[in-house]
Image 1 (cartoon, rainbow, N blue to C red):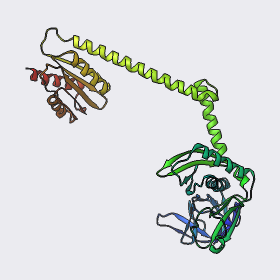
Image 2 (cartoon, rainbow, N blue to C red; image 1 turned 180 degrees about the vertical axis):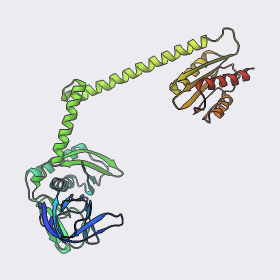
Image 3 (cartoon, rainbow, N blue to C red; image 1 turned 90 degrees about the vertical axis):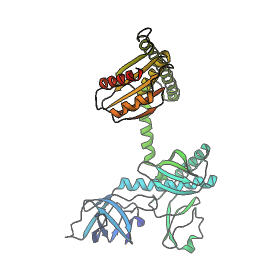
Image 4 (tube, helix red, strand yellow; image 1 turned 90 degrees about the horizontal axis):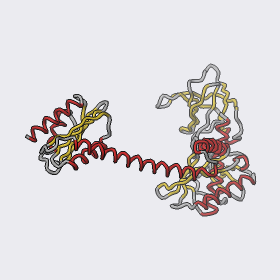
Amino acid sequence: MNKIYYKDPYIRSFKTELLHQGTDGQERVFAVLKETAFYPTGGGQPHDLGTLNGVNVLDVEEVDGEIRHYLERELDISDSKVSGDVDWNRRFDHMQQHAGQHILSAAFEELYGYKTVSFHLGKEILTIDLDTADLPERHTEEAERLANTIILENRPIETKWVTAEEAAHFPLRKQLSVNEDIRLVIIPEYDYNGCGGTHPSSTGQVGSIKILEWERQKKKIRVQFVCGRRVLKQLQQKHRITKELSKLLNAPEQELPLAGKRLIETGKDLEKALEAAKEALLAYEAKEMASSAAAGESKKLINGIYQERSIQELQKLAHLIAGQSDNAAVILVNETEDKLQFVCARGQLSEINMKELAAALLNKINGKGGGNPQFAQGGGEKLMSGEMLLEQAVEIAGQKVN
């Protein structure tokens, strides 16, 4: 098959003949052409998109030596002539990104000896994995600076088909993965690399390169970056976000980090104040409930029912009440939209076993929970109202008191 994308990656439209159509094991319709300008997925570069006779091309793969164009529907077989149109914006974006990857990988290797062991061209960003366990920030800055210098010099990007013997005479950046039909992509006096992807004819067409971030991946460093039009897209996105933050924080761009830090610190102070206020309210609530028990009563049952209250608050409340009433047994029930919860605690002199009380209540609501003789809690299905569960809890506790 004649691969037009190798002859000239700038060709966007072409005419050819339909050799045959078929479906694969996933019932996807595909067409095989006499020649094609559609690049199939491979070498880290995604496939082209476009149309054949107006029918959308959804995927392109090379399978068993033939390039399959997976289509939205079958082509009309009454005419074997096919007109193809490649989505140029997608193709040129891939050309920019792939060439930019070559340039950046070569920069890391030339400056610091970091070899690129893998490459992925994604929809929004690119990544390369460098064979190093550490990447200082100044190394990324210097590699980015060198890469953009190579772009500004507008060096030619050449392709050359060679034999394995001929390839041995070039200073290749990495070992070849094939022994025949070897295609070299060359930036003279900078980078020599075996590659089957599409690239622009000069480094200047890459536009620019910007490293976004990097992180450790096992024993490698994964670098995220963008090239060409994607750099402008990133800049526009970050500029829009910066403007919005400036308005929200009422601060100019250069003062945003300080304004954000102040906001976080203020938020933390407010959280602390709110937590202190909650603790004070709980302490007051516990004191009121403890003092409401009949004076002089030797054995007390202090109870309450609540709606949509956090179980953590009820735990604290039960502990506080029990701490102020040595003879008291505390039973608190919480009712939510679809479940019932409870906590129970006892003062130091109370003889009611809270673990046993909780077990009895859990049986009534198909619940789960646990605890010890001093404190227990649980929750289960809403098989009755909160009032009914509290009544049964008080009845059981009263029997144990008697």
